[in-house]
Image 1 (cartoon, rainbow, N blue to C red):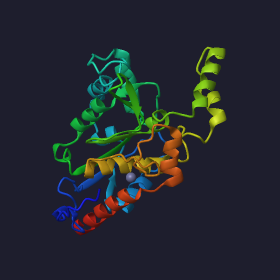
Image 2: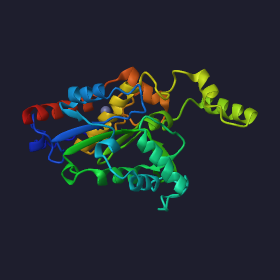
Image 3: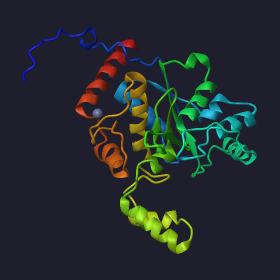
Image 4: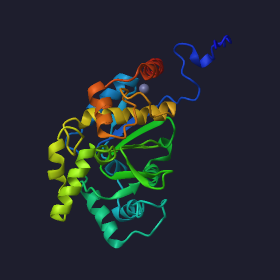
Length: 290
Ligand SMILES: [Zn+2]
């Protein structure tokens, strides 16, 4: 059936105007993760400027930037966002002494990375938001925080899932999440299970070896390229309220497998035609505002 109704163009679809529900950022900030040696944050900021025309100011590591004097209360609040049951929605609990000390050590040395602990992504983001000055807690201030902590969200299937990015205010790109959240090749899990049964411990490195290059690993040389795509998802979310795309070759594709992540971010490295257009409109609007 042919749709014969010709709709008058909405004012928002005039060239050069952006829809009223988009928020063009007044300021954008990126915060590095000093534990990721292959993450070049300047390139990420430059990429966002190139694609969206948004000038991104680079700050210090997030907790360093907000510079809490007394680290212990902050460590306690971070520890309180730990996920304790993978199969239950978040339940607030008083953190243990050892967990607070663990966070204190990480706060004192941001170059340390400790995998294996999962934090509730939304509670963690809300803690970070509470540390920002009120004038920066606006929809028009984009914060892209790179962090090494592994963040998860509790989903409808009744369990927590690790995330590469948690979009919100601020948005957090987890450098551990990029490695751990999208599933590795199926064979990897078989090899890991076989080796674990034989050795009695989990030999991650030995299990990874046969699949080298097929997934993003810690300190992967491709990390900055991948981080560009996730930072773009975060910025797009802040502007258009939509972070993800269904097109597998689009940088906004929500990858569930490492192979999909690499296809979108490294092999393609581009936006789909629709999002290329969205980006062009944002660029044009940013240029007019500047
Ligand atoms: Zn797209």
